[in-house]
Image (cartoon, rainbow, N blue to C red; front, side, top):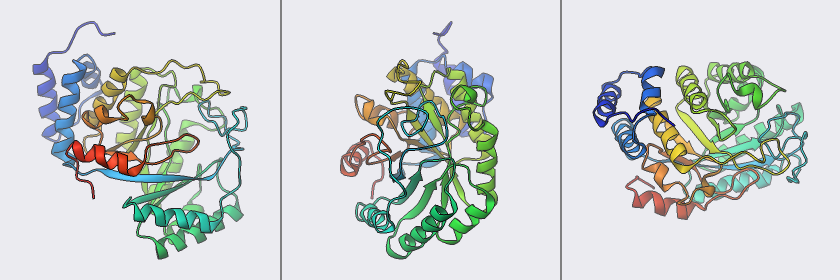
Length: 326
């Protein structure tokens, strides 16, 4: 794939530059992509330990509203544009969502996220979500996050007032590639939504999906966009090709390509929580190699429309790797 292999000495030099608090240029990151994958992963883990230590951040999500989405994201089982057989239901009852938050607390998972399909919640659903967040904060010791599409400032302020702490909104891919992923909203809509959330005093979690057909350079460009936005929690999803979607026949990325991309993300985002998310169960070791290559966060349990990995199994793996797990 690359004309020549970058020397270990050059990788060491760029590693030291990052450890000294300097940012690498896109040209330097592209040069690192020519390094031996194993050695680069090792150095990425050195960067992770230096800036983040052995802390691990674990969260879980609930598919609070499923299907019938008005957006045409070409990877998504829940889009109304495609026939995928995904489950469809309105916003789950408040009691169910609160009970799930209590289960997260009992499992010692620090963050719980409500995820709703659709461009944005309607007025009635927004009020229900606000009420739900309030009850969760009163009854469960978890930090509340939500993935609710493209909200406006008033909606963010309402939800924050009722206990929302963090907003999730993925960029999905690079600005250049985004139009090949979705046409019902644009990359600029994503940026505007993220900036609005920040203006309202909310934390932001934002990343994307690898394996959409994008190039390695697209992944790198997305990481630089996240860096410019100051994002500290970056979900990394590996495409799970869903039958019925336009990406159902996408060629899966090799594990080496995933590890290489993840290591490069650690050099671009040295202080971030790089969070393994959807698609991790597809990996032969359930992500163990990724946690040896710079990753330091994960979503545990089920994803939105696919099964995940149980919290206890995840914690056992992470402890064996030397991470500090409660």
